[in-house]
Image (cartoon, rainbow, N blue to C red; front, side, top):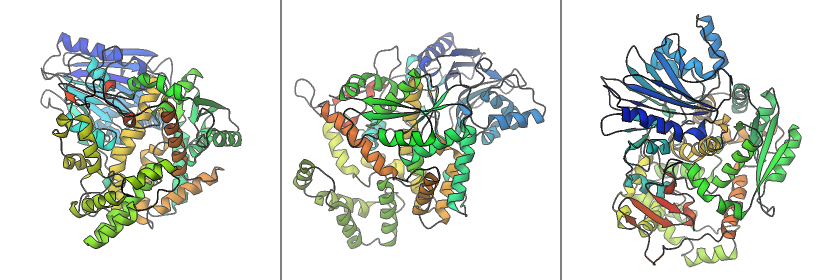
Amino acid sequence: MCGIAGAFHPDRLSEAAFEAVRRMQRALGHRGPDGEGWFQGQRIALAHRRLSIIDLSGGAQPLTGESAGTVAIVNGEIYNYIELQQELAADGARLRTRSDSEVVPFLYERHGEDFVHRLRGAFAAAIWDESRQQLLLVRDRLGEKPLLYATGDDGTVYFASEIGALVASGEVPVEPDMEAINRYFHFRFVPEPATPLRHVRKLRAGHLMALSPDSPLPVPRQYWNVSAIPPLDGDPVEILRADLDDIGRIIVRSDVPVGVALSGGLDSSIVASLAVRHSPGKVTAFSVGYEGRPESDERADASAFARHLGIDMIEVELSSRDVVSGFDGLVADMGEPIADAAGSSYRALMQAARRAGIKVMFQGQGADELFWSYGWMRQALAENVAREANPGARTAFAGSLRQELRLPAGKSPRALAQWLAQGAGISDAISRYERLRQADPEQALFWDVARPMDRIARSVSALAGDGLRDSATLAQARGAFRGREAGESWQRTLVRHNLATYLLENGISQADRYSMAAGVEARLPFVDYKLVEHAVGLNDTQAGCRVTRQAMVACGRGEGHPGMGAESAQARVLAAIARLDRCAGARPRRLAGGRPPGIHGRAVRCRCASAGATFRCIRSRAARPVGLSVACA
């Protein structure tokens, strides 16, 4: 893992642009504490910050191909680099290092833009082709490594691994994107390609972008698409078990100590088993627990599985004071807002790994989304299928009542009383019915299934004032989930939306941001594109999503895990976070003076414990806060 930044101008980069790239390079120092590199030409500047993982002494970047005019900087890891090195050597290539990243310029020289199809890993790369005067930017299929860009006033295109680095350049206007902010309050993250800043965009996962004097404007092009994955027939258990073993074999490659985030749940236990089986060296487990060891604390389960694997485990305990005192640091590490209560746990885990000398951490993100472990995903599928099969209003209303009038099992007396006071779900049932009745038949009912967006829209309007309420409509926010392609099953549609939104912007993004803030590389076996393709393909040929979920449980039992559902494990973690939040006394409140929070000029300021994130984080680490601010009280 590393940090990359750069700039391109179709005629000539100004001295101000070169200095801007230097500032971006400094702002990315946390992503690459082990070294830095630089390349510049008339039209181009490339900057690199290195976290040394493979070929510690010889893998400095930028790297060149056989021609000195092919220059590349890479953030991430190419997991199949050994196989690619062997392939290149057989073709006569003379590689100079053992670095996994060096295969990138050599493959580009042989295959052009199609080189990306040969890579298996987590990566974002920039390649300068001197002969064509072209800059190529590329991002991995699932978006494990971030890459953002912006265009300056003089036509210079800047790019970097983090939004804060682009802000630190001093050349990118810092203006809020009100529609993106509206979507944040609906979804708890900002779906790509938008960011909270109007002039900054994310290069989408599975996309590349070429810039040259003849084509100076950023125009991304998709090279990988979930919709193009063919159906797959066969034994799901055997296929998924083989896929997991295959990615486990290549993802453990490292010249530094490795660790695994272990909760004791199914997903992390499978990942830990893969790491232990394939890693040539020691594997250390890390598990987060909570003060007082409440019922939701999973360290006992994790410790038992660590003993089963014969590995050491380091426990990390969070108290309510830790969560509160670490909030500002959490915000700074976040880069842009993600309202996920588990952020403090992720961050504490990565910091503990770094203190223990671990520079690579394996995690289980992606399994829940890929194998339908979340109840809201299964509910969304059921609603879409039912709406298509029974479009009648009476059926839709009956279904809405069944969903919303269920007694909230396991709730405290206080929560039950609140549920009754709010109408026992009747208003939500009516809202759900209206949403089903008015929805476009090709509009996927997805993220807003469990919590109707119209209710959220009213809350956000009251919270943020007229500026945000007038900036974007509910239909625009829902537009992130429009689009069911011809002949596509609802299962495929929902997985496609999930991979591009919730998994990417919530799970994968947090893995990258908190790990890199600590100088640790996160590796996610379940996000391997071949595993994803097979899981998606199997869903099209099996009897529903239940089959692949059961196959995953079978894989876990094969590793010695009892097969506890991922959703129950997640519920326990979130309960613990909620407990810490209550202990800290966090609650929504108004600003000083009694005025409701609102938008004033270029700043949004409000206090809301439920947001769990802040727009104050859109800043460089050495710069003042900019843009927007949402903070916990």
